[in-house]
Length: 282
Image (cartoon, rainbow, N blue to C red; front, side, top):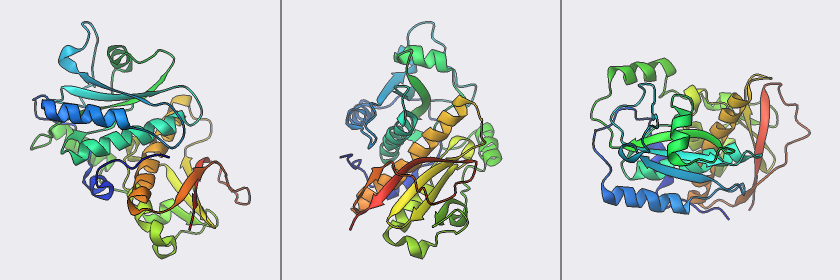
């Protein structure tokens, strides 16, 4: 049974935002120890072993290039996540790492998901990531600067970082032509709203949710035939969204469980790819 993270989940989701400019000071020993304790307790509902890392830039092995291509300024500590190259592993990585980020948020720390804008080989070597593992993302962690740099403000504007798709674009009932009304979602309106607020690569928000009877079915969207790396990123995005959904479900004490059961009676669009289902229980 996957545990609820020990922070107010809805409050942390609403407070979380991407931070790319940090105060140039290290984590306090207390905050670092608390993060390390959070890392030891992480789990996921998909049965995938997830490993997380914490690296202080100043003690990285000599010769390792720990670049973020100018995206991050001031951060001295980075978190990372790796998983075996197996089915559902990227989803589990997104789920577990977002749980950690929500815990960091509750501590007042700043973070941002980095999937492409970092020197993957340098960080993998410095963190000791196994060469045969998937290493989909890192995040700086630290104390947010009082003001954003102009570069960060322009980047947020270009990606419309604070914008989110409307309910009718993400959530459906019975088929992919009928939007799910908030009223029809009942007790699950809050978990779905928290899912809607989840971060994603370039803020593409690739998740779609279909309610059929007592089940919510989760999908991601992307063009058919995209590169494997992009498919992995979309699966990680699905895991982030599922973290928000499931952790809110646990906070509200709603009963149910994940299962792999795509709805065979529903026609699925060509750009829609099934991930997992949630079965509600009384």
